[in-house]
Amino acid sequence: MFDRLSERLDAALKRVTRRGVVREPDVDEALREVRRALLEADVNFRVVKEFTAAVREAALGEKVLQSVTPGQLVIKIVHDELTKLLGSESVDLTRSTDGPTVVLVVGLQGSGKTTSAAKLALQLQKRGEKPLLAAADTKRPAAVEQLVTLGDQIGVPIHREGSESKVEHIARNAVDKARTAGQSFVVIDTAGRLQIDGEMMDEIQRLSKRVKPHEVLFVADAMTGQEAVAVATEFNQRVPLTGLVLTKLDGDARGGAALSIRSVTGVPIKFMTSTEQLEPLEVFHPDRLASRILGMGDVVTLVEQAQEVIDEESALELEEKIRKASFGLDDFLEQLEQVKKMGPLSRVLDMVPGMGKLAQNRDVKDALEGDQMSRITAIILSMTPYERAHPELIDGSRRRRIAAGSGTTAQDVNQLLNQFREMREMMKALAGGKLPGMPGQFGGIPGF
Image (tube, rainbow, N blue to C red; front, side):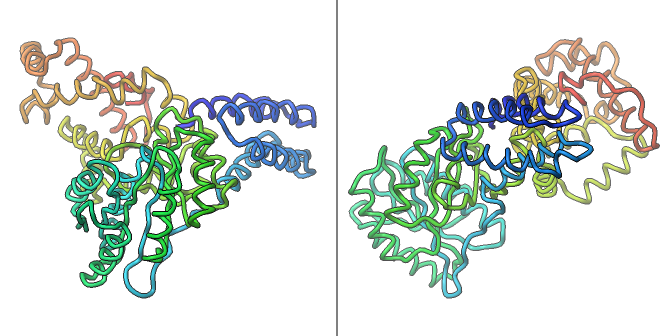
């Protein structure tokens, strides 16, 4: 996410951070590179102009010039201005005080609208809400079936009617059904088009007038850059939007839509999603995304995601095993599976401060998410339970048997065992307050 932009901004800001004293020419030189990086990322020209002007004014302030570490203060200024650009603070959904909260999900076809509707329902379900999904996209072939399939996967009820029903009637009936059934939210998936047209906007306006939604969320495909900003602006003029959902941030998005859309439309970004996997929408935190863009990581989100997948009791048991040096390969495999539940491992690594560049490295990505992880799992599962608990007993003949069972080589098995031994020794030393030299690469994964 924003790999190229992060790289360019990092190079530009190093021009300032390497200097003990920040002078006006230094700031101007760095900002020229920042401006170029933002424009290449397809950020709106007016937004770039206002952003760099604000950074320049703050960076040349007396507080910065007299600071002991002016370069670091300039980075903080850039971070703060990026946060302002993205909306300053997260904005939650509006709640209805009478009956179910109605959320209208709108956008162009192909932006991930139907999937986002299901992900929003999953997000609400995680909060303890009782959502109902309404299939009001009667134009796109199989749109209703797609939503039904997604609803079944997450255990959320669906309201659907025949294609001959008018969408405003479908939406109204869904709201009535939710009120009767005691559902707290109604998420209405609407039809999209390959481009904006009069029929589409008329339909959305009729639907909005009929159900009077508390939220109108526009789903913006980050891959389309400034086109997403232009479409969101036109939607907002016809049907006032209350929030934005940014999708496909894990693709080759240059970042322009994410950095421009809030400023241009005036509509807050409420959610974002990075993958096609059916997982809850991620609540949008401007300061956290600004930190990721600047390569500072996102520890808060990392901790929140870890808390969701890691059981506290299991964590305490693991801590005890580490203290007693009884940490085995079964335990390692369990931890690996828990981390994988947090999403793509390169994305997890991207949230660790200072590890953003490592996460962008193609070799590291291949090691984290490619065949290497599957190979490690296959090797461990080819061992007997006793061998996994006591890997030091694995001799040459056992290595050959494990290699044959996992489709690898005895050398692969030997490498895994050696590096697991190094990792276990490091854990034992950490538990005792001593840290030896850094171990090698566990299965090709730096840091293990």
